[in-house]
Image (cartoon, rainbow, N blue to C red; front, side, top):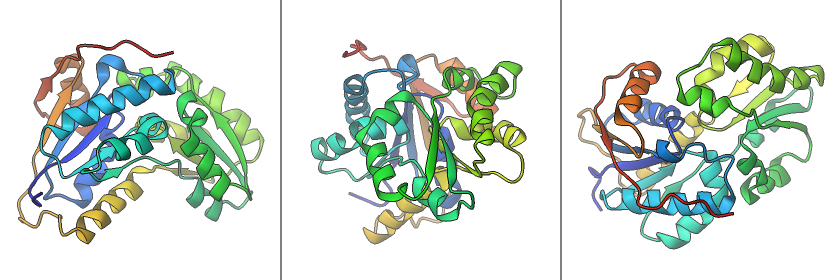
Length: 272
């Protein structure tokens, strides 16, 4: 294990790019391998057993690239598989996504918090655990935002259709006097400008990516594995879907012109 090895990142699609963006900002010397499993997006409407199997395949693929740490940049995969991944790959340090209930509970003034996430995330034991530990003193209002991940995967960030999805989720919460919105899906930060237009300046919107980046940096520093080369790191983008589509999304979402490699899974069946 060497400090110059890359950090692996995977997501069901392009949502994990919000996490990569935060990681790159705080760890500019690190190398990354990003896998977007766009052939099987979305994960949030699939069974937890299916998502667990997908997560294992993604982790095994990235392990073969000689990574020093793996970021599960997907709330659904973290909810369904993070514990199993740690047991299955004991030689890899994992950092997953956890809905930011704790900071929301600590800062809310009204005691009412909205949470936007996928159905699978809400069904997972991880979310239940976070709510039990940190959400006892606040009232939580949940919504699954059907269709929002698909809109973001198409790059449709500010259309009337995307606004309608968000208004259907947020307006009932605003009627309940929420003052904080927790984004429980890594895709959703790409529509923060639209969310802020809907909720107004008095409602805080929490993007979990910066806290994940801080945790990765802490782990690397604690293990003496932070890349200290002083040179800009490299990133490899890989997709299980259409490479040209992924490349266009990099231009739209990250304003970068990175090359995209493609991989094809042999078995993409779902488990009920």
